[in-house]
Image (cartoon, rainbow, N blue to C red; front, side, top):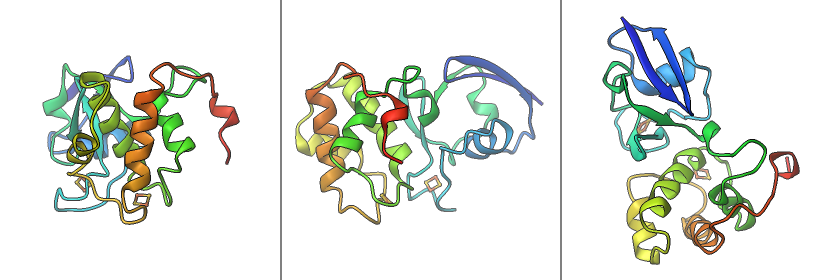
Length: 164
Ligand code: FES
Ligand code: FES
């Protein structure tokens, strides 16, 4: 079946199997491999993307169900070469170790800050409570989101300046 949706600001149409999950559609049909797939049980949350601005586990939704909607993946967070403040916050506060959970964590943080620009720590922890990080202990993730809240305007760090 043909499915059309807007992904990172661009309308895309693809022939897809009706049963394909959004996570596999993004990764395999569109090559957006920043959306990770970490479990078969809908528990890990590493597959989170934004659908119409709301965090959604993309392994729980069919691509066909997303037709007509707007999807944002981690590849769509930066404004050209300028990082989203959330991305910069994760860099400033070392909000990642292996990085596997990071795209979903950052997108959830983006959605949180869009609706609540100055969240309390417990609100940040509640927002990311559906996502598992096996590395950081969450403290640096929380600090990264707090950094982004304190620096809502992009500070000019470009992707090319991010340490490899
Ligand atoms: S891949 Fe684990 S919740 Fe989606
Ligand atoms: S940084 Fe490794 S799972 Fe979160």
